[in-house]
Length: 374
View (cartoon, one colour):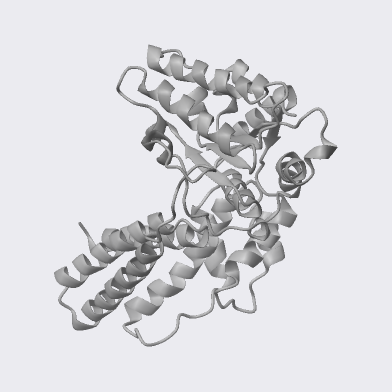
């Protein structure tokens, strides 16, 4: 493998580590710092030039140290039990997130309508259930292109309430054993209803289409799990019971979802790519840690990044910054500071990095929102 390829791979892992750390996902951040450290170590061992070896060694040590710090933070033990202090069964433990993500609503740039809808659906009923004589919505679907903030919004709402957060995806739910996945669904909702009589429980279905979508080729286990999920969702609407259990789901492919699932998710919220105002705010947020040259025009950049997702904007800023780092490391001046990011850096990044979501796909989301949005 070439030196350029390894450097590119290390930068990619470092980029992912920084992103995960910013969003509070310490475990994944530590893993990516470890991978970056391994590649920097490999580079240092394979290239004998004294200056380069020293640079790679320092980078490897820095990434390893950061990984160790994050790993220590994730090892904080938190007791899990039901509302009476009893232990809960193992099948439920794997879904409960014991350390809240370090994300607040103010960290979610733009998406004001989305945030307001979620506050009205979850926060208001919990704080004043007496004002909702006919109950409240229990199912909330967030749909839209990847990288536009669906998961980030969910992470933020978890920090707004003092409750239980349960994370569900196809990997931790589906089992090769007959009937095991359905039992997991039942156990999870039994626990949620028990706790949800006194404090809020958010059950988050990530990539909901993988769990509850309808496809041409399905096996019996997938259909049974979907039917069990629908039954449990119906159980949350039992007459006379007002559970503080909210099932939030996120999907990039809403058109794949079972129509019965959609009927049970009364709130269906479109999370679109950022508009020009939100792009300007995103640029301001992501350039904060870096020095900018006087010629950088954020207003112009927010105009010419139409169609880019929030994660695209973040990656553009980071890639522009990495251009200055690349120059610093290649100059051999490891003790120095990278130069300011210039407008030319941003323009050259935009020249090669296109939006991750096509106009055709955006049109498909908008058409689906017209038909099924609420």
